[in-house]
Length: 458
Image (cartoon, rainbow, N blue to C red; front, side, top):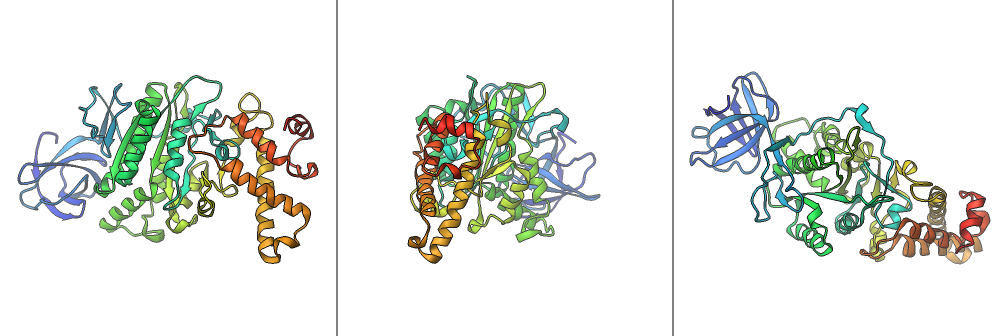
């Protein structure tokens, strides 16, 4: 009952406390807990039985004792205050301002757990997003309303790549600009500072909403951070009609926090100790992207996750790949060669690319050029493996041509400066320039009329 305080804490275990059951409580309801000194802590109900309620506290449970602690059920889920003042602000993982400015003035609050989008209300994503990065635009195109994660590893420049996408993302054939929502979970202070400084220097900070849960914040806060960020994105997209790009880093930290809390609750572990509901929990977040009927806005997601031990079959990237529409995979070997961005050409994939490219969207030759670059690069990898066995001098002249093509593709097409913003025309022309280094009869994935039209221009 709201306004009534109860006593009756039966146990405290890490961020989990167990309270005596009262009438009319509900799952995900917010609970206000006060210690003996009257200091407040907020939590949410995560489990209910006939006689007890399990509450997850956002923060530390230090100082809570069983006899003196009181609690109040607020009869509402955790909510985020939203309004016109969201853009340009920096919040912590619970949606509280940490940029030195007061809370935004608005009477509108939204449930951070979101509402499921009716599949019938969804619009199929089709609008090409130009990121200015050839490895993405040319071969793994991003489409408005898509969820396209970046699979990375510790020490690889995924943050630099994400910042570049945020700076450069734009819709083709439209003056409408993207606004960005950034969610940092368990990130180090220098990473948070890097993003703030980058956005300030490039002048996009006024179009960014940042939610930061730093590495020293309680792990439970990481569970709420992406939900707050996506709630802000839903407000901007579906109520204000904006195109929103959501970048969430690092989803691995989020999953680690989920595992930690699951273990504390004594739940039966699944693969590698992660809870059995990891798939559905991630789907809850990823499926909050898209376009819906009746709204001009859209939410496009780029979750970033660092693969433990660079293992793409680890549960986190594995389950993410099932839910999302492709992945951009960063390669450690390419990074060690000094290439940026080290996007791995073969494992990277965009499942919605075919629907967002072609005449009137990018260019008529886009699908053919992308397919040919992919096929030729695949052959380069096979020839490199052969050369490692028999030696490069034993290769045929054609195989050597392919090796030269592979080197140029990595340096000139995949590689570019972090402030270089290429148009899709520049990217495709560069692809043609590189394919010109191969015999014409090898270009089996391209229509002959496109070869006549575009190869002569190189």
